[in-house]
Amino acid sequence: MIQSRCDGLCAVLSVVLLAVWGTSTSSQEIHFSPDEDLVAIDAGLIAQAKRSIDFASYALTEGVILRALNDADRRGVTVRIMLDPREHHDFAQFGDLSDNVRFKRFAPLMPVRAYEVDDQLLRTGSANFSSGGVRRQDNDLIVFHDARAAAQFEAHFQRMWNAAQ
Image (cartoon, rainbow, N blue to C red; front, side, top):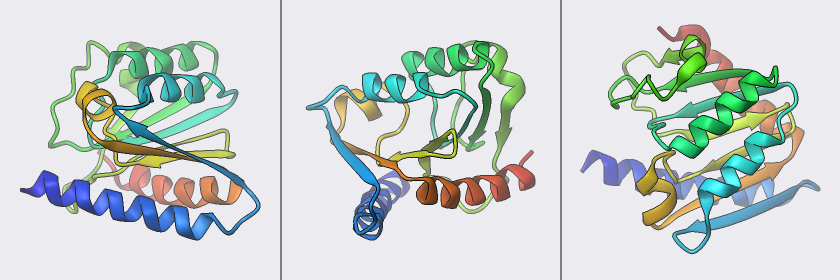
């Protein structure tokens, strides 16, 4: 019940974000699963990072995305990951990224599924970073190539990071 409310809220927020940011001169992309390979899209976006990735997610269990984040870390990209403590996380998959993970303090729930790359790109949408979320469920993935959108997410991420465990 809670998950379906979170999913519904995420879908509404995605549409609102698209409407608000759609009026700017930036470019946007919208993708849908299971019709498109959201894992490949995420891995490609993460591979573009040169300086930093701030990643916030309720769930992060998809191996391809974790490998892409680890590859970015090995390239010298600063990777910070904020996770919800109520979700199970397999830290064996995180590798060296384990040192870069914080958990959001208790309330409210964190149905955020977003990351920011190099202060220029914001990825958001309803898809969890799990096999089901990016491969089998009807979800969306929205990419804003917009420094302003990335900065707004970064400010929110920084508040969560500073308050995290």
